[in-house]
Structures are given as C-alpha cells and as structure tokens.
View 1 (tube, one colour):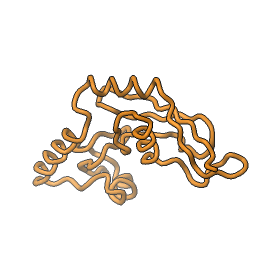
View 2 (view 1 turned 90 degrees about the horizontal axis):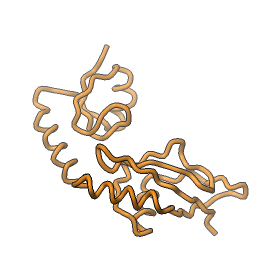
View 3 (view 1 turned 180 degrees about the vertical axis):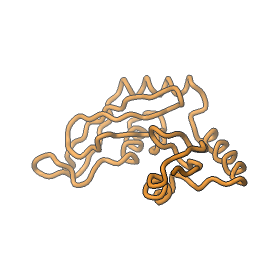
View 4 (view 1 turned 120 degrees about the vertical axis):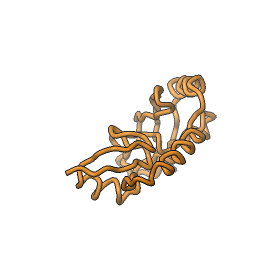
Length: 151
C-alpha cells in the first residue's frame, strides 16, 4: 500500500517541500510523519502547497548567479570548527548542520540554510571532513571542514 503525502521539508532522494509524493505506508508512518517532514494529502491542501512554495521561494537564494558565487567561496575556503573531543580525537557528540552553517557565516562566507547541508557520514572526529550543501535546485557545493579539539 502507498500513502499520498505533501512534503513540508526537503527530503533527500524523495523531493522538495511542497511536492506531493506517494510513499510506502511504513515510511510515512514511521519516518516522515513523526519527524514532521510531511503531512497527509487532502483535497483542500492545495492552498498549503502554494504557501510552502512561496515561503521556499523567499527563503532560497534568489538567483543562480548568487548560488554559483556562493559555491565558488565554499570550494576555495576551508571552514574550521572547534569541538570538545577526547584524547583519541573522538568528539563528544557530532558536528551539527547548524554549527556548520554558523561556522561558514563566521568565516565570512555566504548565509546558508542548515536544512540544506548534508554531512554523510556524520562528523564525529577531529580532522578534515567534507559535507555538501544544496544552494539552488541546480547547484550543489562541497564544504571542506577542519574539526579541531577545543582547549
């Protein structure tokens, strides 16, 4: 069985906010709905879809040129994050996407939405790591992260 849902947030390999998707019942019931990534589809939901599309349009980087200039900055610079770590270099926790977005902004880079950052696998040790950020529907930029132990 499949369930028809409206995505409220961008979901990797599924769609972006405002898309109407058909997913298996278990995926909807156990993952998308509890995390508030989607809402059940109904006939009166078209207005909600339009509002989400408008909000996404306002929130996103307006033009492809801005996204490409942000990608240039991200590929040329390495972002340094300080996190508390044990003696073996293993972090207490993980570097969050919010911390990545804040570190990019603090380093003089573009303002990016934490929900657009994808760090797979999670950053849980000191050293050089990489993540990616979807700046625009056509532009994905890599982020080089240097994690150092906090003193």
